[in-house]
Length: 83
Image 1: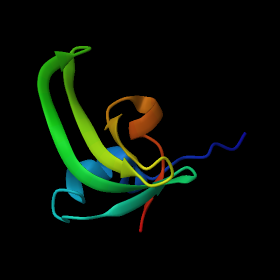
Image 2: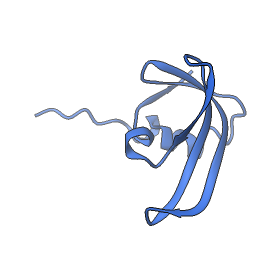
Image 3: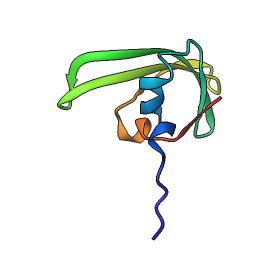
């Protein structure tokens, strides 16, 4: 049984921690949408036993700003492509 394992370096959580904080404007593709990094917000309140990191990004397809919860496994572990 083959599993599709995503490399850690290609996830939103990794990019938020190591790429976006050193690059002022970075665009990335997640699924069929293209986003542009705006700001990373480190929420210091406890969230399910830990802290939450939020990625504020501009969604080009819907032409609006969105907030992506990085440590939500459905979003943070998705494969992204830095453009």
